[in-house]
Structures are given as structure tokens and as C-alpha cells.
View 1 (tube, rainbow, N blue to C red):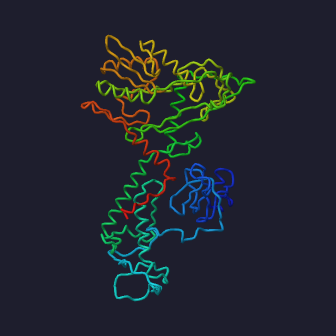
View 2: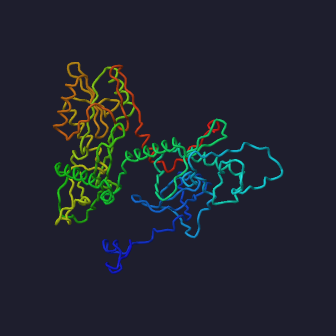
View 3: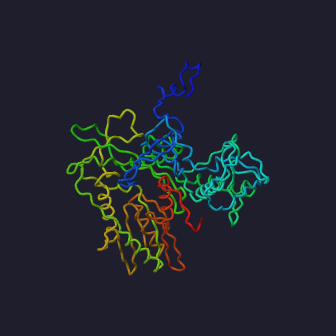
Length: 502
């Protein structure tokens, strides 16, 4: 950002982008900022904004980075009103251990016990006044006029703030290190009677280092942020993975003959598309693979022209749980398969045109558009077309739909019964023997491009743990709950201790 005489007074940014950098988003650091509170997080008579402190702009998020004055939570928002000539009063910021003056090793401070209230106010004692007790006072040196009577409240505020920071383990807290700054005071140790506090001991330093290393580990395995657009994806740290996933999706579309390039027709609406990027996780929450999907903007379709009927059924959750229960009790095999680009397998009855996908325009043919031959994700009729295609194929294998749920297919041959449960492109195969499971998998792979996921472990947000010896199945949503907590961490306040814990 700094101009140089070698570049004729221009900044590197201006040389690279050929424009002067915008200063619109630059605000005075630490100024007052009022963040809008949306209707879903307030009642009718509640405040419409909350006071925060401006901390800058984030690297990979749109908006501003701010700190809530009351909760000390780091929040990100674009709906902010700044008062650059005003600054939040320091009195509103509770004392934080990271900003407290560091004490020497094994220094002790005695908290005076409660004293009976009197009508005569206590005379303030300066912090510099000599005392018989060699232990230093807890009064900050920056304010020599602070009375000793405020010491218990200060330590109690420190204790509450520290305990609150320990309990709150969301990822919005950022660890900062500065070699030039003095070491921060460590977590206090209080005796059972609450009379003494030991600060900055070796044990506390070791424990604090372990906590810091744990925080780094948690940040390293945190869920990857899914970019909203193709352009944003190409600017992230995972740009290579997203580009590879998009190429794989585009290759599947070409191999499937999803469309043909034709001149732009006159008088017809040309639909556009967008890339949707998703990170697939294992049942334990680890990153499995990066996935990209081309989705047409079906909300631009017109009824009677681009589509007619759109309904397609999915399996009911209670039916799926019942199937898993039956499989556990009868000790049946339960395997899972995923159909690659499932919606691309059905042929369209309507005539639909789409612009070439972003990032994959063919050089020299940018003026051409895609005439869809097969269904595509995002089309209103895509789920129905896929369901009809899959149903017809399963019926050709001897399966028939259950009356109670048309997404459960059953086949009985020579007294041997097997099931196939369908939830869009996720297939659950339930059969008595592994040989029969392999037979069904081979038949499906010959017709569709499939991914064999083996024995079911993670399905529709469920983590499935099976104990075949005891014939039980345990279903939980630990990963989903963790993801929800991470998603709403900016809106979850700090936990408050109960009176018994205090």
C-alpha cells in the first residue's frame, strides 16, 4: 500500500490492479460502532443496535470485525453505523487478564474479608503508601489514586472474566502473541475460603501453554469455510481443491452428454447457473473430500414453459429408523451407495437453454449457449425426473414400492427378502448376505455412476454405530450439533455460572 519513487509515486496495489485502492472501508480503529440486531434476535421493544468497538476488516469475510462491549465477543457484520469521533468508554470494558499488569512469580495478594458497613466512608489509601505487609497491592500502577477498597471487586471481576473465558470455547476468540508486550497474568488460584490468590506460578504457565496448544489444534481441524461463489472459491486457501472438484463435476457433465452448444435462440429466456461448493465430512467430523456442483437457477423458470409437474417423494425418517431397527434385530447387511450426479440421468421433456458455466466457457464459443438434453441440479422438475428414472430401473430388477412409502423398494426371491431405501441420491441396501449386497451393487453400477460407501456409518446427518454382537444400532448427531454451535457461535452469549458454582 506504500507508494515508492521507483513506481512514480504509485502503490503496488495500483500497479497490479490498475486502480487506486478504495479507502471506503477504512475506519478509525477503536471507534464506536453500532451493529444492527436483526428481527429474529430481538423483540419488538428491544434495542435495534448494540454498541461495539471497531477492530478492522477480516481477511476472508465480508463486513467489519468488531467486539461487543458487553460480552467481549468478536462479531462480524456489514450493517454497522460508525461514530469515528466517538470511542467506547473504557469503564464499559471489564478488566481482562490479557491487559492486566503482570506480577512477578509467586507474588501473593491478600483479599480482605467483608467488613461491616458504616456511615463513615473509608478514607482512600494511595497505592504508593508504605505498608507493613511486604506483599504488593493489586492496584494498577497507572492509577496511584485508586483506593485499596476496590481490590476485592477487581479480583472478583478478574475471576469471573477468566472463568467465563474458560467456559466459552467457541472459535470466535483469537489468541494474539506479541513478544514486545509483557507476559499476561495467569489464571488465579483461590483457596477454599477465597482469601488468597497465587498468580503466575510455573504450574499455571505450563497449563496455559497446554491450553494454547489445544486451541491451535482445534483451530487446525475446524470446518473448512464453504465459499458462496466460484470467484470467492478461487481466492481461498483451498482454491486448488475447489478447482479440482469443479473440473470433476464438469467432466461428469460432459461424459453424461447433459447439453449441447447451440446458437442463442431468439425470444427464449436463457437461464444462468452457479457453482455450489460443499465439504464432505466423515462420521467423526474429519474432512473427507471437496465437492462442487453446478446448479441452474431454477427460480427463473416459468410454469407451463420450462416445467409442469415437480413433485418427488423422499423416504420418511420414521420409516428409515424402522428399517435400521429391523436390520439390527435380524442381523442383516446394511450398505450405503451414493449416485454421482444423480439428477443428470433423466431426460427432459421440456426445451431449456442455459448459459455456459462460470470458469468453463469454451474459448471462441462464448456466444453459444447450452441446450439441456438431460436434467440438471436446480431445475424444478429435476427431482421428479430422477425419481422416475430410478424407479423404472429398480422395477426392472424385480423390486416394487411399498404402499406406505414409495421410496422403499422390496424384492423377495426364493424366500430371501432385500430392501433398497432411497433418499434422493443416497441409497441404502439391506440384504441378508454380503453376496446379495454385491449382486445389487453390480447391477446399480452398470446403470449409474455410483460411489460404494460400504457399511453405513454416516447417513443424512446421522452418525450410525452398530453393535452386531448385541444386535443394536445407536444413532446420534454429534457432528451436526458441533457444526450448529460453530455456525451460531457469534450469537451465543457467554455462559453464566449458577449461584452454587460461585
